Each structure stands twice: as structure tokens, then as C-alpha cells.
Length: 295
Image (cartoon, rainbow, N blue to C red; front, side, top):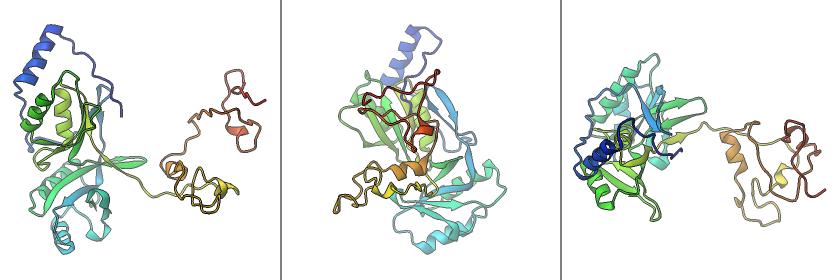
């Protein structure tokens, strides 16, 4: 995630300082109402707004602890725009259930269904899902913020309290926080992240998405790949080796394989005539390879 600071506003430095002081020392920013229109989804990154394409095929829900399977099924079947409960998918690590939507819905239909679910006593929160070609991003009740160095811990606590936000984690060596919206049925983490960004007391603020990838299988057909324990260690070499003591190459290939990615090998050299490498070696404008110090 890009964590560069925001571009300076086009008004005077004095005015800017006055606004910062008023936000920090006498904040009057109120949490946005949950009734606000939420059809246009976006968040700030790299100093600009990034549009999030709302999925009209699925949404996510977190049921409250103790809600039974049958209760979940009843709730889903009571919502006319949700598809069959049997088609759900679970993201157990985050206690989320991905619910499919019926075909030919509008964005307003999706938003209304999320709002309906958020009124149910059995539902902790319902979240939109954003669709990209290679994955879905699921909104959660968390967002990540880095406050400006000049903002004190007491000021941060006061601002969090004002907006009904709690700290999930904060490393000791940084001013970066993972925060949680206490009542995400009233104010979701996407809006809250934008509110924090626009407050002028943060370097950046963005939702802590859960990225859901479709299962894939990208395993090389190289005869000797099973010997490459550094890429995928099953304990094969030497016998009794440590399984998973590797760089998780197959897991990375499941996410992306792209011939445009340039990899620098820092070693004594590389045999750029090798049959596995020759077609993929980088060359400069004159057709020269990188320097091989082994020759």
C-alpha cells in the first residue's frame, strides 16, 4: 500500500495550520450517518481517490457468536435478493460468510440488502465486496491509519473516542494503527478511513481489506521441480528436511505469474545460456546481458 503523504492544499500555510489546530485540539468532525448514500465506493491512496467496483454477485456477513446454522439459513432465505444459502462460502479466519446475490441486481439493490442485514439482531455486520479481475476485496470493520508525527497519543485517543473507534494493534516503533469501527452497522470502515484521511491529522488511512483469491494450481512441469526444496520444501532433500522451510514459490505463483516482472539475482553469476533461462534473461537496449562475474 502506498503510504506517501497527501498533496498540499492550495491555500495559505497560515490557514492550513489553523485548520489543523482546530481539528486536533477542538475536533468538531462528527461520524457520518449510516443513512448516507453509499453507492459510490472509493478510498484514498497515493493522494488520490481510488474507485472500488462494487460486486453485484456477492456480499459478506459476520453473524454474531452463537447464531446457529439454521438461524443463518433462515435469515438468508428471508432476503429476496440473496441467492441460495447452500452456495455460500466461508472465510473462517475472519468469521465471514460470503453470500451470493441473485442475478441482474443494481448497486442500490446490493446496498439495500446490506442495510437490511445490518438491522438483524443475529448479524454483527454486513459488508460489501469489491470485484477485481484477479480477486475480491472484502470490506471489514478494520482500517489502517498512520498519524502525523506531530499528533500526540492523547490527541489520537480523543479522536478515536469521538468517532467510536478502538485500537486493534499498534507496533511500538511506529505511529501506525490498525483501528476497528465499534458499530460498523452505523458507519463502515470505508467511510471511517476516508473521514480520518480528510481530517488532516493522518498521513494515510485505508480499509483493512480481506483479499479473497480463487483457488488455483500453478505447478511447473519441470522434471526436477520436486528437487527444488528452496521453492517448495516437503522435507524431500535431504531426507528428513524441514517441511515448509522455503520461499513459498507455488503460493506466490497462485497469485500472479507475469513475464514482465524483472528479478535481480545477486550472486557470483548466472548461466544465461541455460535452457531454462535463455528465453527469459533481461537484456539492455544493445542486447547485452547483465554482468556475470563467474566467467
